[in-house]
Length: 387
Image (cartoon, rainbow, N blue to C red):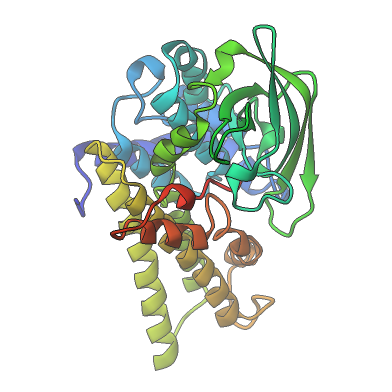
């Protein structure tokens, strides 16, 4: 694992800084940061970044990328988040759905979807979790019934994000019943503007609201079946190692730790020790994420390493958010905390509880790590993403 940027990563970080300083991009970013909305529409900003080729630098050139690799894409993501660019829609569209398509899609599916995602012209989300199924993705009941040249999907999906801002969804549905509950799951690319799709919200305390998406006989053509019918479970497991790098959680940990420092001046020994421990925790989270990312550039998709990174980074971000609340007080007024930092930490405290549930619960990640021990089977510990 490298501990320093290579020339490509360094130049991309510099380019991100220059682009964000360009007047039109700076104006769009300022609008997002000062909108006063808990969940502002970042799509115009993403389109500006997409026109400059910064949303998917790791993808092949033919699909709108730069062939720069996973580490280069992570470097860009770090710079964007550090500058205050909200990242969730990018995580969903490029790092999850786009990466899934790049891994498992047909050439036609890649040509049809990836360039638009890379350009910020279209956006995507995932529809996995259902009511009363919790982390057990294999217990899903959304049905996909054959109909002419495709399938009709009927069911309810919950705990997704950004569905109202998205054009496309990667959806898991059951196409048959087999001997195992892991049999008969298929993956589809669902047009969220299609007849029969309705998007609502699930009340929550975080700024980014969870979605409830109803699918009422939604027709999905055969061309939008991802992979082979009934073979969605092994496909999910293969692609989750690419999704679960822990990068997004490590970025939250670093952002929240930095915000917490803004209000700390002179510190007694106990506080100084706590600051050191939390800073080390944030840096360890980053290094674990980069270990997984570096492996991807070497062609090594290790599901156990990915589970370890997801577990540690999400737990670290959650603990840092809670620690910041204790340091600054429940109303973030015990110390002189700048307004921007106070808003960041208040939102972090509300978001933090969900971090160890989304994209696979911490318990499932530990089970997956344990499954790598001699004599254990990892099939049931795959821990599909809960979104």
